[in-house]
Image 1 (tube, rainbow, N blue to C red):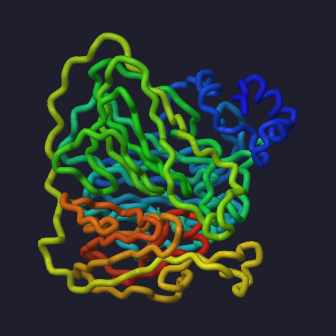
Image 2 (cartoon, rainbow, N blue to C red; image 1 turned 180 degrees about the vertical axis):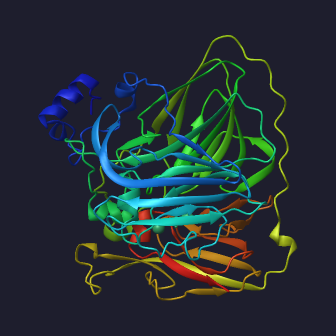
Length: 492
Ligand code: C2O
Ligand code: CU
Ligand code: CU
C-alpha cells in the first residue's frame, strides 16, 4: 500500500472515504510513519505536573469523555481532567497522596495506582471499589519512607471495562522522586499508549477476535501525540520516564545513535546504571532512562515483538487482524546546537534487596491457560469462543485464590500453557525475578509486570511485607484481564 500524504488523509477522512481507501477495517489511517510524521513534527508536550508539598498531594481527577486533538485531528476520547494522558503526579517517599476520583463517564469506573507499594484496603489501592456514573470516591495512599523511587502510573480497574477505558484514554504517570537526585538537563515523562479511531474520530471498538488476542491500536501515541519531536543540545542528559500504557502492545524500544542508560524498570532500581541498546516493556511496565544527546536525528522506535498468536492455535494460521507488524516510530529526538557542558557521572543507587538470601516459606504454581468454549455457558454471548483462566478459573471477586501470610516470603512459578505470552502483574507487592523460562536471573531484578512467554514459565519471589488485605494478580493484556484472567490474593 502506498503511504497516504496528510492532505489526502484529511480530505478522505473528511469525506468518510479513507476507510475504504485503506481497507483497514474502518480505520481512518494506517500507521505509516514516513508520510505523516514528517508533517506532524510537533514538539512533545508534557501532561500537567502536580507536585506534593509538605508531605501531601491532593488531586481531583475527573474521568470524562471529551474532544481531544489526537494525531493532528479532532477525536472523541476519554481522559482525566480533559487531558490525554491525565496529569503527572509527583510525590516523595513518605508522602500521602489523596485522589478524589469523579466519574463523569456513562459507566462505572475506579482507580488503581499501578506499582505503588501501598495498602489495598479501604480507600487505599482497592480495586474492588466501584464508582458509579455521577459518583466520586476519595482514595488515600500512604507511601512509606522507604518507598522505592521510580515511575508508576494510574488507570481504571473496574473489572470487565479496563481495556475499553484505558484504550479510550484513561491513564497518567506517577513519579516517586529519588532521595538522591540525578543531575539532568531535563526530566521528561513519555506515556506511550495506543488507540484506534474511526473516520469521525471516535474510538473504534476492536472485533471480538482482536480483543481475544489483545487489542493493539492503529495509532501509537506518546503523551497523546503521534510522532512528537524532542529537542536537545549535544551532551545534554535527559531523564526519560517511559510508561507502557498500551492495552496489549509490547514495546521493544530502540533509540539508535544515542546513548541510553537504564536506571531501573518498574520499582526495581539498578545499583549501577547500564548502557542499553533496547528495552522491552510489556503492557504495564515502565522504564527509567537517561539519554545523553549525540548530535543528529534519532528515532525512538518500537520494534515488533512476537508475543505468540491465538489464531494459529485456533484455526491453523492466518490472522484477521489489520495490525501492522512492522516497527513503529514513536518520536524523533533532534540533537543540535552548541554542546552542553559535561555532567557528573550518574550516582549509584541503593543495592536492590535479594530474596534468594532468605528462605521461601512456601512455593506455589499458577497456570495460565486459554481454552476453547469459554464464556458461552456463562452467557457471555459475543464473548464466547475462548476462555482465559488462571488455574482453571476465571476471576471471581468473592473467591480467594491465594492466601498468604503478612511477612512471608514466597516463591511463585507462573506457567503459561497457551500459545501467547501473558504479562503477569501482581498488585501491591513487587516481584523479584528468579528464573526466566528456565534460566536463572543472577542480578536482583524487581518488576511488577513479568512476561510469561508462550508455553514457558517464570519463577519469582515475593516478600509480602507491610500490608494485609485483598489484592489481585492478572494478565496485563487488559482484554485478557477483563475476560477473567485474574485472581485474588489475600494477605493476613
Ligand atoms: Cu496496571 Cu491491575 O493493573
Ligand atoms: Cu497494577
Ligand atoms: Cu494474557
